[in-house]
Image 1 (cartoon, helix red, strand yellow):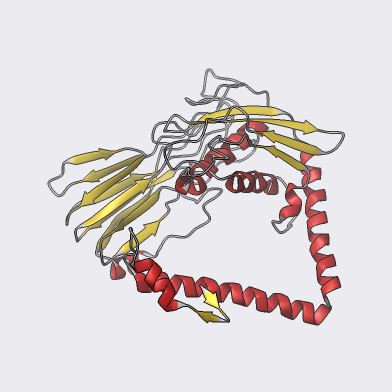
Image 2: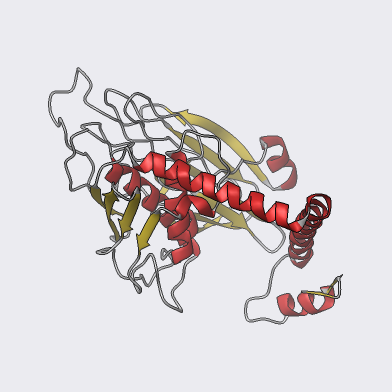
Length: 377
């Protein structure tokens, strides 16, 4: 793509054009490539400047300090953890199984995904790198110190992912939903095995629409899970999302749609001693003919509650046609939208933690379709 410092725009344009599935908006794709290349170049420049100022040996030494400090911080977190295991089903029937073994004498944790469903014919497979990143994320959140996320966090952790399972698939398995959806299931399952917190919304609610002229993609927030001593949060991007929505004014000025409403979905949280967070309701009305798609989960399996807390509410996807008829959609769907049609996305709530005084049963057990283990917490 870049040769001798020059962006090979003609060659890239040729690849994007003469292909079985040509790009629809080539100028936009080229601009994206240039932005990524510029960002990488800026990173290289700053690193070289740092080496020039302090010397390579000093820079490398401090890089090692950062990793060593992260390793010690994660070991400190591991010291307070207990063994656990968890089984968590997804809407498509696939299941994430994991077992956590804490080697206290070595201050190490073993995360074993043996028993997880084999790789899928769908695109919900997650490459091993995504699985490892999800584990890294969880253990980083268990560290109280303000350390940068880095590879040192994984040094005291052994991760076992059987080859050929959906978390370590072999070519040519499709993996597009692994990063955005399956990663969320891994994170929640690991929190569940450790007894840390109930499930969050567990999905990015990937919403896309477009035609030959317009293309748009967003992820939509929901409720986070509750834990021992804290409630979940309403209307937030949870865990692996960390993205912002386009301002309504910008969305409506650039695309032929109207954001009819974007509200908190009251009552969608899992109840308990500590409540999960509420999801949201987002309604987008179309002014032109387009194709819209939704890639989501937790429309069949609810986000689990912990320690007797209730599960969060399932999400829902549907279209309100111009004549007011309703077309119910599944977890993943592609649908033709006509002027006047409204796409509605109701995102899941987070699971609750513990038994509220008004609850009469379920003490010490997980709630939710996919949860099969009891814990004492």
